Image (tube, rainbow, N blue to C red; front, side):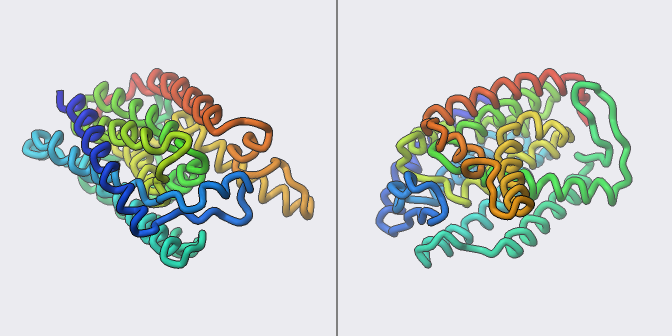
Length: 328
């Protein structure tokens, strides 16, 4: 029941907060600045309120405490740790968004600043999970049901890399109306199912709250978007997605449930690499992948539907791949 309550509560709180937050963001002129090098057809989005991720971050936070109160009274705080981990990334994103809004330009924190902050948060989270006994340095390989035993320092490097990469991949996916929201809802539902299957009710509460908060946000974020989540929201989501994977000790499932995140970031890497190797030629019409498809005639609604459906199918496959994973 706490999982169901988590979804409903986060949905209702986030929905209500949206009614208040969007007018406030408009009044503060917290509008999105569109990159000059981006798609010209996105220039009409200039000025759309950003930092809308605050509504589901707050909604999820309130729900994690209320719906997960019973678990906390039993000494189970993992869901709170995952939320706080994601919140750190959300704060990094908020600072980035604030700088953009303040200077009315699509540049906030520098890449080295973001990287160092994200790396520090990732290392701290992994150490904390390890200290509390929720994490082993053994990599569970989905679908084959075996573990790869790694030295702890090697695992630390692996974990930090995966977390920073995941967070930025989710950030890149947030490029058209509703896309990051629609893709992450099935991922959150996968975590609900996995947490319930493994017996981690508290993590199920967080995942359900994540799904509920995003479902409410989608009402405002679906094309044509009334508000954008901004880096505030997308970095929080990235932290939540990878935080849950490590809290459940199944990080290698991330490329499966996050197939769209992976495709988006790979398209960026391929584009940049190909441009440098060929001295100016482009592999894609425009990177990341969603812009390439837009230039090929795909509408934002079609992108949302196709990418969300692909993620949903991969999440079903992923659940089958981790069903034999035993609780720690």
